[in-house]
Every structure is written in C-alpha cells, then in structure tokens.
Length: 120
Length: 290
Picture: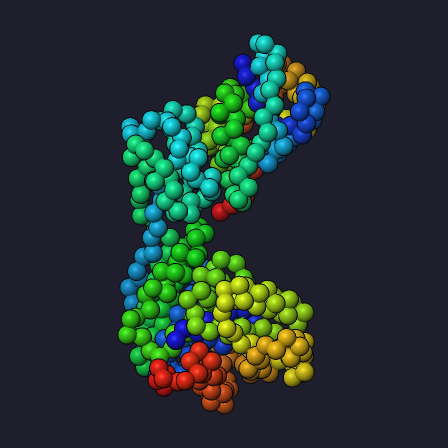
C-alpha cells in the first residue's frame, strides 16, 4: 500500500507537516517494498488560491492509496474523496512514529473536512 | 466624459462626493455606482427601481462521456479551479474560476462546456426628476467583482449625459482598476490623516501606471494647512477642494440625506469642480456641453 504523508523534511525522521495544502514535501511510503519517494509540493506561483486542490492533485498523481496529514479543508477533501483516497489525521510527530500508529490502526479517518476553506 | 470618484482608503467620502457632484450637476450627469460589493448611492435618493438585469460569466461544466482523461484542462487552469480525481473524473470549483476560457480551449475532446452563471445584477434607477443611476451589485458568495464593474459600465446609456460619474470601490486592487480604467479623469477623495495620505500615495501610483490624470479632494478637513495639502504642494498635485469637517453633513448622511441637503452652498463649487474636470480633459472646450 502506498501512503502519502505531509512532511517538513525529506526523510522518515522528519516531522509530519500538519498543513496539507501548503506542506513543504510529501513522502510516499510503500508499505510492501518499504521504499520512500519524496515529492515536492510545488505550487503554481501565480495561483493565490487552491493550494489544497493542487496538493490533492499531487497525491492522486503519485498513486497514493491513503493520506496522512494534520488537517484537510473542504476543497481538498472533495478531490481526495472523489479519488477514493482516505485521509487520516496525525499530530506533528516523526513519520516513523506516525506510520507505526497507522499500522496499529490508531489514526482516525477523516469523514468530513476538519478546517474551513481559505476562500469564499 | 467619464469622471471616476475614487480613493485608496475606504470611508473617505467617495459616495458622498459622487452623490453631491451628481445632484449639483444633475441635468448633465449620469451616476454609475461601481462599488459593486456594497453599492449605496441608491439609499440617498427616492429612486424608482427598474427590473434587474443579470450579469453572467462562463463557468466550465464537465461532460464525462467525452473525456479522454488527458488532463489538459487541469494543466491549462492557472487558478486551480479544476482537478482530476481519476479517469473521466474532472472536478470543477466554480468559486475559483476566473472565466479565462483556457480550459475550453485546451480540451481537445469537447469535454468542457461553457455554462453561463449569474454572478451579480445591474439596475437602472430613475428618480422622480428623471435623473439616472446605473448600479452594479455583486452576488452574495461571488468574488469576481471586476466582471460586474465592467458590465455595469457597459450599461451606461449610449446617448448619455455630458458627464458620467463613476463611484468607484475603495482600495487600489483590481476592482479599483476596473472602475477607473475607462475614465477620462479621476477625483481622488482622501482625509488629512497618515492613513489617508498613505493610501492616497498608493492610489496615485496606480493612476500614474494607468496614465490617468487626477485631482485630489480632502474631505472632513480640520485645518486647511494639513498633511495632504503639504504633500500636494511638495509633489505638484492638483488639490482642488477641501470640504471642512461638519457635524451637519454627518447628521444628514446618517439620515440618508446627501451633502447638498445639509449644505446647499456647495452647489456652485461642485458645478465649478465638474467644469474644471472638463477643462482638464479637453482644454479647448469644443465638445463640452453644459
């Protein structure tokens, strides 16, 4: 299973980034091969809006089957839900710890956006 | 001739001046309320309101059966208004769309269709004396104020009066640009405070970039020798009128009355002000009717 995590660094020792749309990197962790790949959360520089939508697009294109982040707003939630990617919430802990909690099914799945949108 | 009444700072008296200027020159003016996020010129006169005209803009609609999942529409969108959630599954976020039309052009398979969506209204207001005001209103929940402003200005009658007065939105952002870009002359209303001066400087900078001529009006003036007056002298800007602070004007305003109701002696100075704008626009005076 491929799990996308929002992160402030580029290794599994880095902390989870609680922001989704404006996180620095995504780490894609493959639980079968234990391989990780780092995806930069590049945003269109002239877009002042829709960071969450674009970040969700990165997660979908990476082929992730689950996402772990700190929060998720309404637009990103809509995109990820349409793509069938479940979202799990975690605090800003080291990713190794977050993945352990995920394995133990100790992370809550988000059933609705937990923060307000930044626009409209 | 189109005269925009604008300001950097909000609450300096744009609407007060626009209305007073309109009332002092009613036989040669049409008033356009382009402050579409909160139009309020209509509150001060007993207008007869005409039916509303909808303002629409194109929003993409996704047609799944035509989609080949190439995602070119998503790539084309510079505003993140489209997302691809999977094969033949494009999501549209209408509230982020700027109606640029990029996605319609980018899609090679006719899977994106234009649908007109209402984002605001335009109303023609006619007073009992036959004065005319065009008012634009941005719909609740919509953010594309410049489109509503541009459409409002297009609704000014062709056989218009000699002068079109444009009550502009505050600030110096795209709404301000949309309201002043077609103007022949701009009156910048400000107050003699550090905030007033700061935002006036921003507005001047924007107008200079737009190559618009302008003059400055100080509202609620407490002493004639103030920071705006000093700034204008220093930079050679036209300071054409200072309206003193007046409890009488404020009381009239709070009761829904315009400035001339409180102080009719402003009628002549405000007629002169418009003549001065006309002279500035057209020094030879050939096309000016009064």
